[in-house]
Image 1 (cartoon, one colour):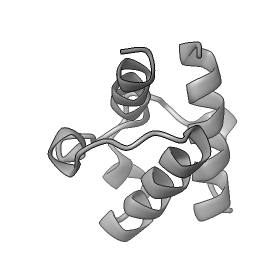
Image 2 (image 1 turned 30 degrees about the horizontal axis):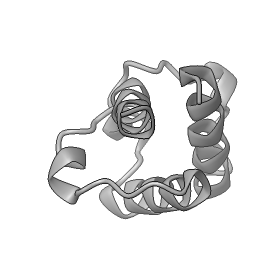
Image 3 (image 1 turned 90 degrees about the vertical axis):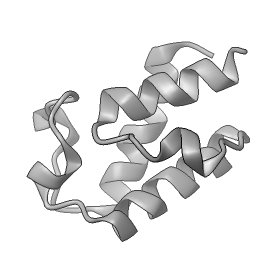
Image 4 (image 1 turned 30 degrees about the vertical axis):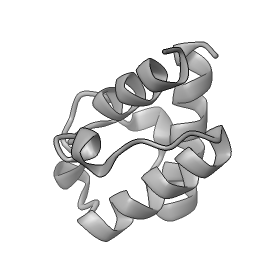
Length: 81
């Protein structure tokens, strides 16, 4: 799976959890907290994405995920390992 395909799934789930967020205007390197995305929202986004991609990632690997690029990179690395 390509990084772009993983990004598309993450952006879809971001939009599902945070309907007011426009993925086209999202800075992929900006912290989620800058968009008022709290830890519960982030858990929902990550859980939905892992379910859709059929991948499991240990929570300790996700503890430092603070932006979309970091999440996509982590998921892409595990999927293509």
